[in-house]
Length: 288
Image (cartoon, rainbow, N blue to C red):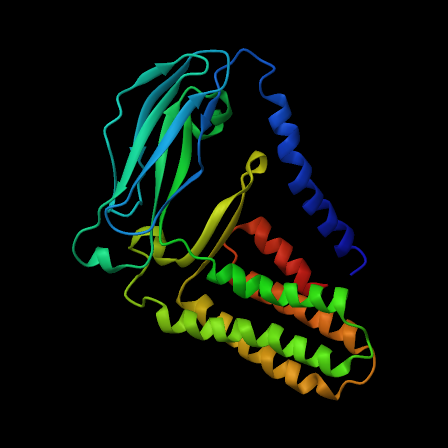
């Protein structure tokens, strides 16, 4: 435990300071730089259209060789044709993407895809000049709420409750465990069992995904499949039962419930994390 805590603090510190160091290095050389107005385009319903601006924020000429909907994307994502173009410093190019599903796909609550921009941006050299933009229909924060609600209740106990307020501590712990369990039942009820590995996004559902630490290719990536849904429900149920069984504890009640809710956050995060770094963080939280 004594070794894990410093290691966890170190990786979290890197997540905060590394992006700023990488950004500070930009702009000091006469190279082209691709600046995309958004790393994600979100669509609410069929027929929605979203625009994306590609800007050359560097000093050299930026060559946009191709803009395309990437492989593995839902067939409903379509874009207007974009011809190859060279952007001088400060110039912009606008791209329009539409979500137009057909048939049964129109009834899906979520759809995923990606937009690929091929350019001579030196920052994209490792990906062969390809920069990606995520396409999402039906963005959801359900898994994020399930994972971090116990942590919020642990912070509430830490900041506002004292060790002698036994009943208030028990109530806060019950709420912290009950809400994720109720949300897990909603997750199970609305999980689409017709989707599988052959479908877009490999059948993952309730995905919440964005780039966390770009310089290290680390992402905040939550999602569930059939197995992890079962584990989320089981974790919520066992945690709720365990809180109820802990009412017999008489000493250090406040500290116990804080650590228990932190444990639940770690367990929930482990079962829905789809990025290895994120998985490691929740695994260490769980072991603490």
